[in-house]
Length: 178
Image (cartoon, rainbow, N blue to C red; front, side, top):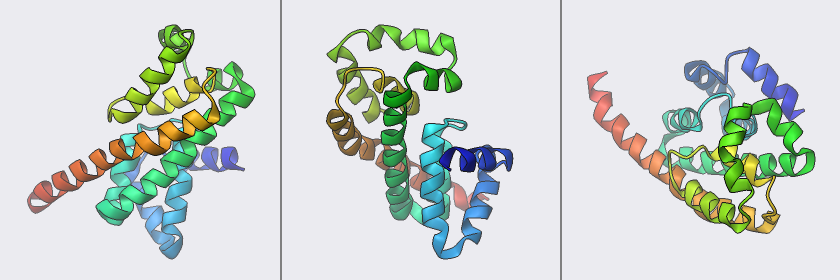
């Protein structure tokens, strides 16, 4: 169901046009946060647009506080789902979404045992890391589900918070000029 919903959202342009996404979600009224969280989950599993864009959309729609909360919930659930999908379906799943060149680039870390775990945790803390891909790659390693979830739960909010506060501040400075 999530895959079909994701494909439908992509075809309707919701995953490629932030303005269209914002207009549609805000029309959902009280259901807007749940719809946004669902779209964040899908966006993480099927990384069509950079997560930074959807993070911006949440802040624009819901403000810094609730945008952070909805982003954190959706991105965390999506990251865990992505990890579990790859854990279940392996390289076949990743090959549908990730170019071979990108896969080859990260292969060194995947073969490095616990080295990947450390690199993964540090990368999740960094706002510019390709988190969605790294969550998929983590599913190919021997990292336990418990360790993965712990890293996401403890490290992911800092990146989202940095985006939320930084973008909220930028909006306040830019808004008077629009």
